[in-house]
Length: 360
Image (cartoon, rainbow, N blue to C red; front, side, top):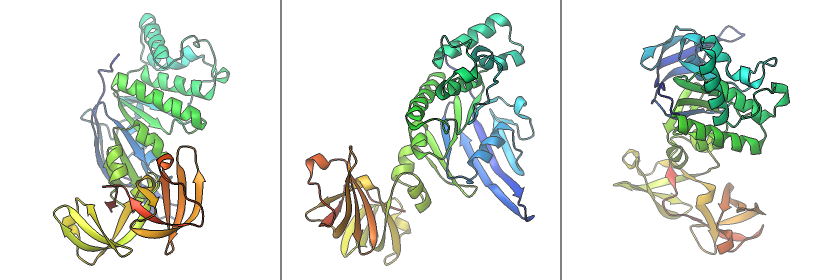
């Protein structure tokens, strides 16, 4: 049931300006350019006000760029209205018709396109089966759970076989357990159909679970684009490192930088770090070293001593918060069953797993 209509999306130097109440212009989206391949699942990720939703709405045609161009399938659609673009949107609020049953909500777009009844019925039933709504065709939205309503909204977008599927924080109204279930469903359906998908969220776990690539936005600009692994393990900035997961940041002095390895001084010890940017380092400069909490562990000996402020059993890990000369370090020990568990108030030593440190 592959979607053979799927299309690529391209933004060229897109700017969206607004006028604030005090008559000053501000840029919600500031000179953004990006390429999304046909069949790719890309997430626009960032905090509230970063420009991600405005970018999505410009792709959909609900907002017009102040300058720049939007292309879908190689066609410049910058000045085209939403109904003239080959896109479909899954909204945060579901936006279902309360007076239509499930079948007629889903088939609404096909009726607008004057699809004949036998084909309309066949397509609608096939999509209902795909999203797990069999037997619910005669129910009305107020008779459905939140998860079922979200499935109807997804089916209504999919049934018209758009070239690009757009998601505007579609899971934010669901409880935590249902969110995980629905995101897995969305991923399964997208992979099966092979449809180009652009997804907006501020939830980094959602972005990591769903995406082929993540685009992290901040203050209207793109901070970093990459696979979930690249974004998590090699963040391009402190903002990205801090927004994606939890991070420890250590200020260190560069001792040497030679052939892919930068040596830094960390609390009196010299530490070698694999570093693709080693040629940019200068001896004596201060750099920020990132260590994910799961890359840090405590032992009887190590790189530097630290005071354990808290030690909490979290089920799947032992979480420590420690203090080293005023710097708090978060540690997530997922291998605590094979190591000692330490208590609040003890002085122990910090160690890092091999190749786990990253210079930002």
